[in-house]
Length: 420
Image (cartoon, rainbow, N blue to C red):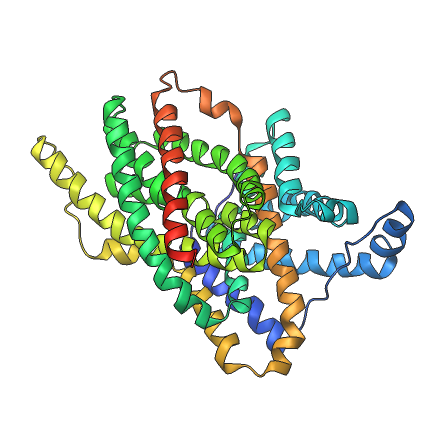
């Protein structure tokens, strides 16, 4: 049974702000985590380059560093630190295995990234073996992804954010409004119940899991229905994350268009990062900024939904619903976006080039490590059977059709805004 820290608990987004800042400050002023070697092309090189004593020590240092940061995160968010420290080594070893596989020169030549291997490894273990609940409770997917995103801010020049951010916000507004309305209309046509309709519409149109959770909170939705929607989001994000970059490559889409398409279509932030990484650095930056533009709308959307739901239930005679307040916007706003922006401003304007050069590779390596850890965790916690527990398949059909509409509309808008 999981033991939680009841005396202190911080919202995960604020915990990420603290942890991301801690990693950056440590790199700048105290200790630069060395970068391990994963590249190999033969068994001889694997032994000489990856599994030599020096590289194994570097991997141990990285393990101890990420374990410490993760344990602090577990404490800040009220999770069991003891269980995290027991479960994290297994997640780390699986992640290193994925990174070593991806380090093969042939694998690199066909553009298969470590996040794909970590995800597949996690899925195989999570779906074919029964994992203890205490272990599942230690998985910190969102925490890992968001720390990686804060570190991504150190590589994104602020002028890029201003340029792509304005276009990204326009895309986000058009896509969110059109896709949300289409999903809502479709759910009503298929006679999906009201709670699932609201959660599905928000999850498809805004930002997946976070939007589903925020909407569930705004309408005080049923936990089982929320879990069902989250399962749909995670499972459909996997093929989209893998195949959309290859579709873009096949049709020679420009990186900016591809990034905007991925950032606006794929529902989970981590999957956006992974798919953007498959395309290239420019696509990764644009996809992240576009996804952040959608994330920024989350608080406003949750506020609007809470108003709608409150009046809907009041008209229906349910007086138990709380009247919404302006605090909802701030409560739902993704705070880690502030840390991403702060990191970008710091590295864009305030640090000398020599200092940036000293920490650049280390922070980039840690960013990749956190993302890969996150996708190992996603695989471990995603259960394909969850989609088929619900006897009524209409919510699944509604979700899939709305997602298809989302992919098409977002591609059109991405071309119009970023294809010039």
